[in-house]
Amino acid sequence: MEITLKGTVHYEVTDGIAVLTVDNPPVNPLSDGVRAGLFDGIANAEADGDVVGVVVTGKGRAFIAGADISEFGGEGDGQDMAFILFLKT
Image 1 (tube, rainbow, N blue to C red):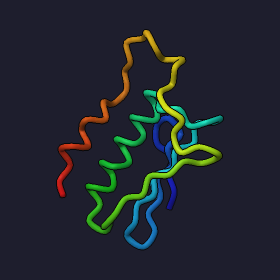
Image 2: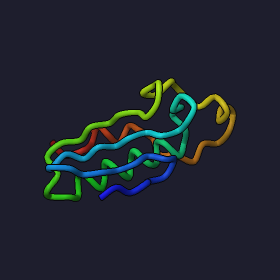
Image 3: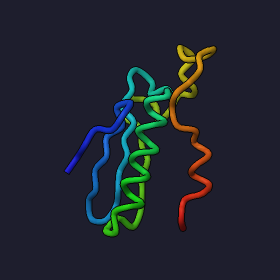
């Protein structure tokens, strides 16, 4: 089953592996929405007892080209990626 999370991050589980695919054309900038989608995807994978691993990939020609400069100077309402440091191992 595949679902689309915030910021066009697709989440799919196959054989115990959760695959998060960033799909934010043209070069997958790391926008607030993508950060939120990655956060939700990792949280879903962590909560799913059948998931034993997570792969993060990008659709198109770039994995993640960098920050979404169109959001520079704004307040930013997305998820801070520092949460990854606190995930259970």
